[in-house]
Structures are given as C-alpha cells and as structure tokens.
Image (cartoon, rainbow, N blue to C red; front, side, top):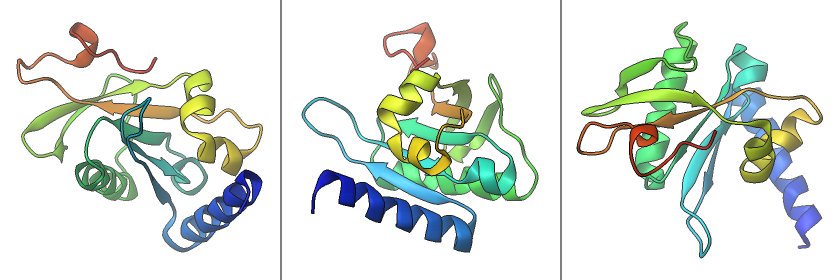
Length: 144
C-alpha cells in the first residue's frame, strides 16, 4: 500500500467513526524523532468544539483523557484557551492552549485531510509537572 492509499484508508475510517460516534480518536506512536500523542477528529463537525490533542503520554492514558473530555463536551461543556479542568487526568489539573495552524498541518494531518482547506481550531491539553508548574512555565513548552 502506498502512502496515498494509506491516507485514503485512514480518512475512510475517520469518516465512519465520525458518522457513528461523532468523533475519531487517533494515536501517533513515538518514533525516532518525536513523542507519542493522541488527538481527536470530528469534534468541530459534530459538536462545534475545537479538536483536542494531548502529547507525551502513553496512548492508554491519553485516550482516557480524550474520552473523558468528549463525554464532557457531549454534556455541554466547552473547553477553551486558558480553561482548566481536573477531571481528565486523575490527580492533575489540565489546561487548554491553542495549537497553531502550522502545527496542526504538520502534526495532525488527519484533521487537515478530514476538514480540507478549512482552518480548524485545535486545543492542546497540557498538565503540570510534579512541581505543579505548567509546561509553559518550565522546561517543556506547549506547541503554540
């Protein structure tokens, strides 16, 4: 299967998941030049809510946080830049920061493929380090 066919198959799966569940969960596993991350596709279309991404966690933990977030969104919660939440990752206060269009195109290509030329808002879920500092206050910067 060539690279173009891979994207076609992936897009079909995203479309089916969004039609059936209202969203799709995508995991990108760690590789030699990057960390693992997970993100949603379909929240804008189904719930008029920004897509969500979470970086640097094992997929099982990231997936749980995103499922919890989508459940909150289904119940009417709107996450936005600067909003904080303590229900997504047990024992951690999370904050939401916007992801630039450039980073969305570069790191979240399924979002770009699903929505075409449309600029889609994406929020990165960040969490504090053990010292209770958010990444933008310390060593690891959010994507924006």
